Amino acid sequence: MVKVNAWRLGTEHIVDITGLTHDGMGVGRIESRVLFVPETIPGDRVLARLSHIKERLAYGELVRMLEPSPNRREPSCPHAPLCGGCQLQHMDYQAQLHWKRQQVADALARLGGLEVEVLPTLGMDEPYHYRNKAQLPLGKKGGELVMGFFQQGSHDIVDLSTCEIQHPLITKLALAVKRVVGDLGIEPYDEGRHAGVLRHAVIRVSFLESKLMLTLVTRTRELHRQGELIARLTAEVPELVSVVHSINPQVTNVILGRETKVLWGEACLYDAIGHLRYAISPMSFFQVNPLQTKVLYDLVRERLKLSGRETVLDLYCGAGTIGLYLADRAGRVIGVESVAAAVEDARRNAELNGITNADFFAGRAEEELPRLVRRFGTIDAAVVDPPRKGCDPAVLEALSGAAVPAIVYVSCNPSTLARDLSRLAELGYQAGPAQPVDMFPWTRHVETIVLITKKND
Ligand SMILES: C[S@@+](CC[C@H](N)C(=O)[O-])C[C@H]1O[C@@H](n2cnc3c(N)ncnc32)[C@H](O)[C@@H]1O
Image 1 (cartoon, rainbow, N blue to C red):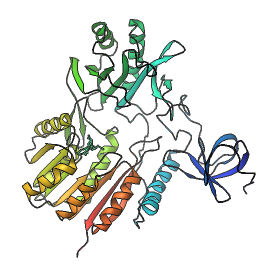
Image 2: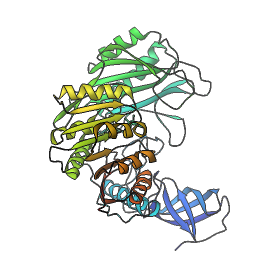
Image 3: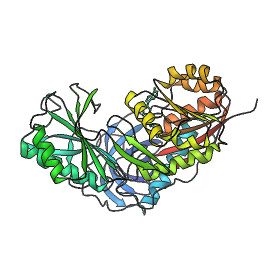
Image 4: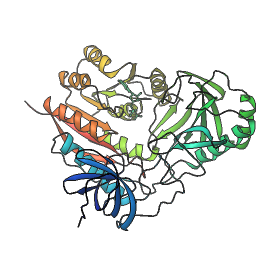
């Protein structure tokens, strides 16, 4: 039962939370209007105060929990709920999997107007310490050095002491970086004044080799006392094998600068997914959850059912990881990626694994694809794994124009997946069941994979 007061700022309402937004906020209704309440989950009954009102919807603050959802849990991380790294720390893991599936189903039905079966989300048995990469901003708060993650929806830094989703070696190095940077008096970046030096510490770990890469991102060209910094860090954290400097003088939210050089040690890390080894350089995209990446890539193999003779496109290929994973089942693999350093990694990865039937091209998928179709002729299958904004319409049209019979779409954003599947439906394709995979436990994110096939005319 919902008690309705006037729809005015500051009024308090009893609300049953029945849904969850894609960014992890609880959703309830007051009569026919929608109310979003942060820190709530489906099944909660709460007292909420209206804090921001629009015509048909409003945002509320949680005043009091009246009846908690049976799926509520006490967050096990001391940084929840402030830290923007995780949004679902207060939700039971099985319930997260359920809601991620629901999110995909809602997007496909409501935004895409599609009737597609959505399978239960494939989760992790041990959904902790799964991440191989952290991007940690540095700054000052009350005159003290802070380093950690941005608070949800802001650039306030939550000072990190522990993290349940990062690999433990990442946390070990992060704490050492903060301590040594503080000891050496290296100035952190001041975002408000665009002053100071050290903007971010980007840390990557190889799960295979338990080795670390640290990229120090500075506003300035110079990083003073860098020799002492490296000496102290490598002594304190022997797993650190690579220190990289990235210079980013711009006023921007983009973390890495254009200019990157190795200061000390190795130029890349090596990790494995299933039967393959991969080199990862500082600028390349690499999936952040290696265990679930194997689940995802195995699904791509299984969905495509290649015979060994096909020409397969890997669009948005990053370091070539998916295409190479398919190479032993394909006649030829052709990868396209816009970051030149990642294309170099892809070529090196082919060599590393003795793969000779894969070619990688640097460029935008929408520009390269028509050229590649002309050059290679028949394309038997394609994998697309675009960033959150989805595929450029020209990519979908070129795939359809080349009559590619089977496309596996790997998506990290259900909304753009829905939009692109809907466009592919107009172009004569039909989607098979959508399989959500939980690559990011405790966060709002969900990965989805769908096989799309050309309908017979
Ligand atoms: C979600 S990642 C997928 C990478 C890879 N498939 C994997 O599994 O590791 C998306 C990749 O698309 C690249 N990218 C972004 N826009 C692009 C475009 N217009 N054309 C080609 N690649 C693009 C990014 O640099 C990034 O490597």
